[in-house]
Length: 73
Image (cartoon, rainbow, N blue to C red; front, side, top):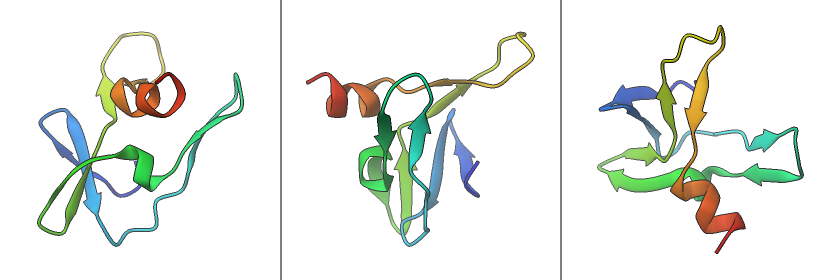
């Protein structure tokens, strides 16, 4: 995903990377790079996305805090 490296169930990208907005089809929600970044470690930005492995035939993602802090709070 977005040339991200997996790090302890989270993903990290170069902070200089051009990360496309993440949009959702069920409503007019989108998250940009600023929304997705949880922490910066050196030149890497840790993204607040977590993948989960469930046997449903498609990838599943946990959005959690990055989604809630923009659209709920």
